[in-house]
Amino acid sequence: MAVIGRLARLHQLIGIELRHTFSTHGLDAASFDVLATLRRSAPPHRLTPSELMRSAMVTSGAITQRLNRLEDRGLVTRAPSQSDGRSYDVALTNEGRALIDKALPDHVATESRLLAALTEPERGELADRLRHLLESLGDKAS
Image 1: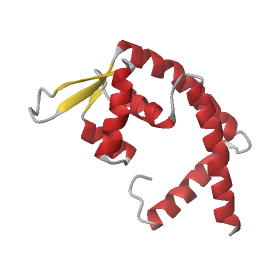
Image 2 (image 1 turned 180 degrees about the vertical axis):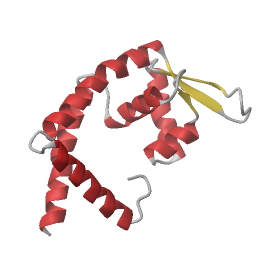
Image 3 (image 1 turned 180 degrees about the horizontal axis):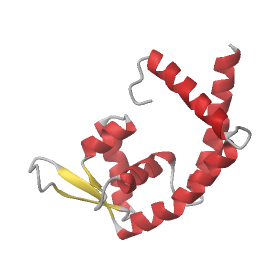
Image 4 (image 1 turned 90 degrees about the vertical axis):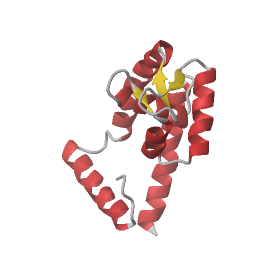
């Protein structure tokens, strides 16, 4: 109970801090995830909705909803795929790229602050142990 309770409490505390960081940039966690995933992709920072769905581990409906909101804000565009006429590609707009480039350093700073009590070796050990636990529960994306 102690381990699960502490993990649950950490989830709450970390969520509060991350939501605050995202909100300072007018984002939520879902929007940040899509923009950051596109930014990490190779130039021209373009992915299919299926690729975004696999990365975020959410349903196609959830990705569609996220993309609709981001497109309405002018942060992403959708265009027919040049390689598959049945699909389309999602790309960052200049505004979307500028926003994620501004939000990402703040996100990393928040993560660093949240983990400041741990040394680098302790962070690595914790990450390894959590990965092991996730994999033992069938999680493939750990």
